[in-house]
Image 1 (cartoon, rainbow, N blue to C red):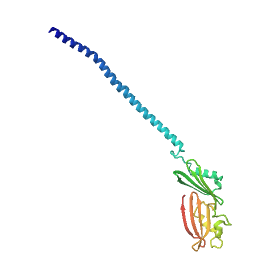
Image 2 (image 1 turned 135 degrees about the vertical axis):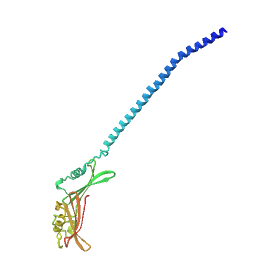
Image 3 (image 1 turned 135 degrees about the horizontal axis):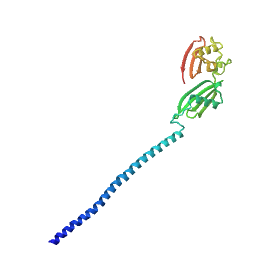
Image 4 (image 1 turned 90 degrees about the vertical axis):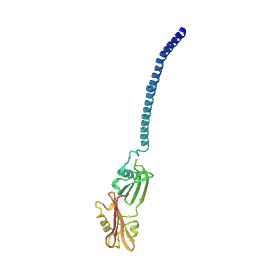
Length: 236
């Protein structure tokens, strides 16, 4: 009986020693494992996420800037303006602005890009250009002789000459019709007007237009009475 009691006591003591030794190790493993997962693993995940986000944002911004530059500044709204478009057209024609009359510059869109339509006259020659708004590149051009009679051309030409361009045989001369039209546009001169004599529905009349200071004026004047039959104004 004593032997059984002694054996039981020794068994209990051995179990206590084993438990005491195992606990520190288990706690260490738990603490190290938990802290490692939380401290090392958690921080690593968080830091990696932030690094990825920052790098992605930075790379995205750089790519956008490069694309903008490659597109010729379209995203930033680069535009040479109407004056720049006129300068580009005049340079292409080899004409000085002082020699150009009846100047018109208007905005348009062609295949999704902004362009400027530029036209002007030099004597009896009419120039038409399409200029790219982003960089002033000449996209198209056309040069032709204007068949209309210039107001200062006393000999008449083209269709007007065929119809009595100087108003011979009419109650109102071409010079008088020109004066009537120019009175309505202060500042405009004979260099800004085109006019021709037409015969329509049994009535002789002068038809023409004035292009001045960015505006276009179209008119009809009765060649027998000098009365203005029609008049319209618009900005191209």
